[in-house]
Amino acid sequence: MLKSTLYFTILLFLSIFSNGQTIVDDFNINPNPFQKRAAINYSFINTDTVTINVYNVTGSLVVSPITNSVMTSGVYQDSLIMDAYPDGMYFVQLKLSTRKTIVKKAIKSNTAGIQANYMTLENIRIYPNPVKNKMTVEFAPFNKPSSRIEIFNTLGQCVYSSQNLIEINEIDLSFLTQGIYHLELQGIFEKKYFKIIKE
Image (cartoon, rainbow, N blue to C red):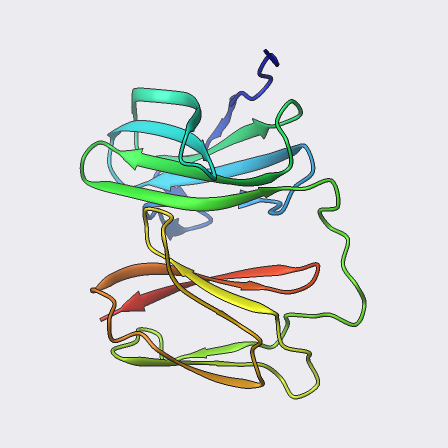
């Protein structure tokens, strides 16, 4: 059995304020995609019981680096070291007691950071956001559209997927319940993520 070298080390605790801005319940993984290691930056507004779980694409728990740890409100940064794990997609879950669960997708790839010059996901407009029924995803005229769009709920479940996008794409999201979702644009060598709110 391959010995796990995945671990988290708490590196930094800042405080209830960061650069003069009030802390919110959120986290991100940077870089993403990553090759072997990534930083997980997370914050929460209340002293809370914190659990961080990492799942593979089959939904199996890979590791629980933090389990029911009581932590004061603030900003934290942990290291995610994935040397011994295969390339692929993982889901990192931040659970704040029973009041909130946030899930982000993490991609481990030996080719992370390699992008073709002709492919860009810059100058993308997504509107309206918040959305009630229909949302538009618009690419700049000189950009080649990405090959796939996916929308995930906060549990990491894909609730919408579409391929072969054009310059202006209208998406019917009337079937979604109210809440926060994550929209992922997948290019040939590039991904971009957006948070959307369904009213």
